[in-house]
Length: 344
Ligand SMILES: [Zn+2]
Ligand SMILES: [Zn+2]
Image: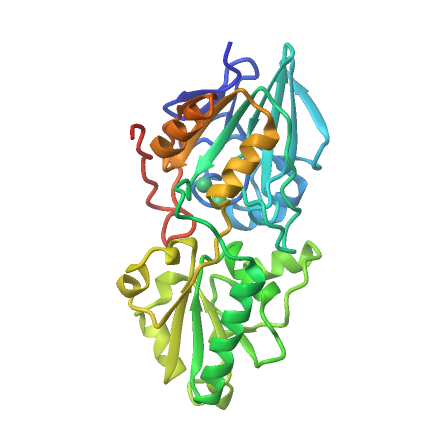
């Protein structure tokens, strides 16, 4: 018997009668993390990790019916024992471990295996069946150590200061923005953040994550000389908008795993691209799958066909799961989910 099946509303646990990250409103939802395509409005009950609570309430409303569990804490519902384990993707992100009749399944949500200091690092969880994402599930995706990427960002920022230009760095406002703030050299100059980023910074600080001081960009006047030295953190949707006019002369850049692809930076129309992802790369996905020790792997959103074929060649029982999760390395994904491909 399968502990998790795909239903039109989302990934469903029949024995426990609840959904994991449903994309349509349901009675009982278990949420892996607070990105908009995994945590949606309209569910009657939410269950999440304790570390996710602040972001979930900030995004879905203070009045949602939310129950939380600390990482590793167990809850039994209709005979299904459920617990959350760190996924290393964003603050509060969790893998969901389900145990029923001696069978263990893990639904990993989105995950990253390199620790980044802004959330609890990924912890492998042994299971019989592992449900994995495949956002960057192609062999071409191999990330450089993040220290190297941060060195490149610092160099770009310093060069712009020398040229008297603002540095505008576009990135997804929840997770990536805070990871960049945590990792950059704050001694170089002032840091401004967009109105979509600043409230999330507050939630991270409340959770005890160190972020350097940031100034809300809306509070700075157009003629203010700090613009010429500032690093500005903004969501991709701010690019090309009238909001950008206040910075005068600037250099812009985009931070995303997709910057690994030639042409993406040019299509974005930005000066620089930094390859920084909050998802596992190809070796990271294979490492996590191996650590889980599962004989069966269900592959969701991303390069399903390629990863399924590779795992089958390794002798694993692998298959694709069609979901409506989007792509949080891109912009506007919360409102425009895409259906993942199911065949090679
Ligand atoms: Zn995500
Ligand atoms: Zn996702």
